[in-house]
Amino acid sequence: MRMVDLIAKKRDGGQLTKDEINWMIGEYVAERIPSYQMSALLMAIYFNGMADDEMAALADSMLHSGDVLDLSAIPGIKIDKHSTGGIGDKISLILSPVMGALGVDVPMISGRGLGFTGGTLDKLEAIPGFNVNMSTEDFIKQVQEHHIAIISASGEVAPADRKLYALRDVTATVESIPLIASSIMSKKISSGINALVLDVKTGSGAFMQKRADAEALAKALVAIGTAHNVATKALITDMSQPLGVTIGNSLEVAETIAVLNGRGPKDVRDLTVILASHMLVMAGKTDDIQAAASLAGDVLRDGRAKRAFKQLIADQGGDATVVDNPQKLPQAEYRIHVQATTSGYVQAIDAKALGLVSMQLGGGRKQAGDALDLAVGLVLHKKVGTPVAAGDTLVTVHSSTAEIGQLTADIQHAFTIGADEPEQTPLVLDVIE
Ligand code: URA
Image (cartoon, rainbow, N blue to C red; front, top):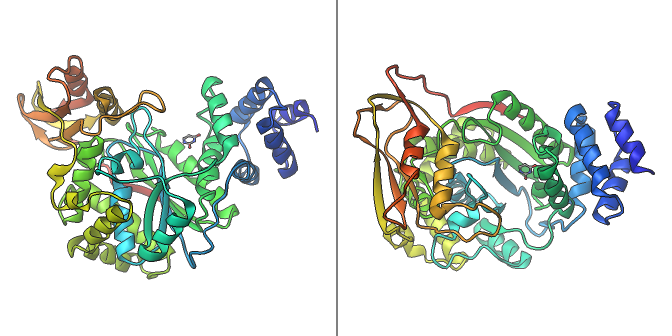
């Protein structure tokens, strides 16, 4: 085979075969295909797209370029949830103990934050002692005993994706739905699960800002999962404002604990229950989505999910007493109140802008590998639809410095305040299966 022929085929709107894709990925990882040729192919894919089976073959080839976890020692359905990333998205921290309390096996392999979005592993590390690095044997044993574990991938997961992603980043080919979908699914499928619920975000704080793009991505993700015998469902959910009222690692753990105590912001509670109900049906706990929602609501109200969270923390070496004493979480030295300069209703919140403020405070990474300040972040006092008077506090900034300079103005600009009360966007916009 010659790479130039594959490039020409894709350029002219053709479809690559499974053999061609396997050959190309193998040769690229072995560094026998130069990046200039791979760049040309990526651009051809960017313009001409990929058919479902082509995308599935690409995901398959990328996933087999590295380690694939064997979870067959855990019988039955092993389900995970993956979010395409948003601001204030702490749902995995709550959802996992909800599922654990209901006896569903959730072997969760999570990631770290980069840029304006946070990561589940960073949030968990705000809990003193919490260890996200575990051997596969210990990971399996924990799930067998207590149903849930949340770890970082060990070994080499989909190295072809890592190499291709770095190339996409410098060739303006990141924003291609088949490339994004095969990238995400190669990593998810390698974790050995057989069912997956995807939370595909859309809005100002999402990777896919436009709803139509989020829908197309959701369809592509589901097609790849299905082709790999992973039962996959995708919910398109709103990220036109931050989820809940906290952004920042320690603050998001505190909000998680509030929800596990039956309190916390309604949007966080509701989205947890909705995602849990789909997972419970897929795991075969019930075939009725309403019954599943009430099971999830019950364990949040009666303390079973809170107990499962304490168990998860203890299992992974953390200090579970933070659940009863959240003040033991890292605390920032300064609290700075940012006020509204006009009156009206909050009509919109630029979630990405607030994510970037949290990053500037030290709560997020400018580049992979940056150390984080787990204590810093933002607490929102106003969300979309709330009336506000000039001088009201919009946000309390938790900072390690007394002065935050330009960040005050950045926060104020992130809020659109106007005379008309805005319509509320529903939390779940669509379900793709
Ligand atoms: N996240 C991924 O894992 N891959 C992409 O291509 C984009 C977002």
